[in-house]
Length: 230
Image (cartoon, rainbow, N blue to C red; front, side, top):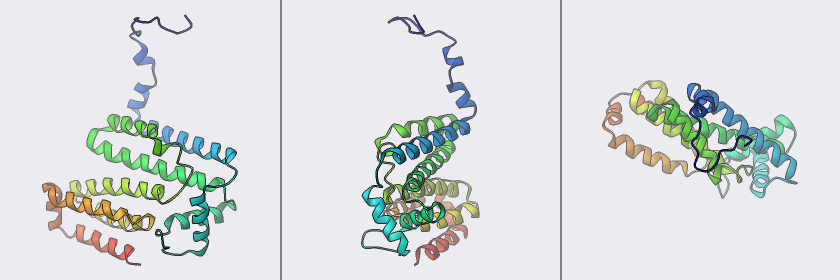
């Protein structure tokens, strides 16, 4: 029947072994790379071919980016800086912003995978990330690179770095957490809300709270304040 199964019939026992899933579970990082590559290609090429002009928010960010302002009446201007850099590197105002949007989305996938891998294992982490493109926010709106998308990889990275710092206590994790947290504020000030709840978790989790007796969290805090001070 051309590969179709009658209603009520059972799936052949070798279907699971012959499907792509065993390969993905054996090499979940390869599956993650394939997902990111597909996301980047599909949502960069198609909007570049179809859209006559960039979205309104992107045009506004391009204008702010040309002035290299630190802050406007709406938001901090890391997205505008990134858009201006993409223009300086490529000479185009169109397709680079679509690529930039998908790069931050893919970076979010990577950091979510890293956090889920630490908590749930590699296979379940891959399953979690593979479900993310089914959410509306990771699909149709992604060609519009704005502050909401610019902050996403920072949120995911902060969660992962905070988890690692609270569990391992190594100095590198705390310093990286301070740096990423400080830069994240330049994407959008709502990153501060995540930092507030992260501090609450740090104080409420016994294992993480014990790290406060070491100098590394305070050095990370100093890095954060130095980066966020401007």
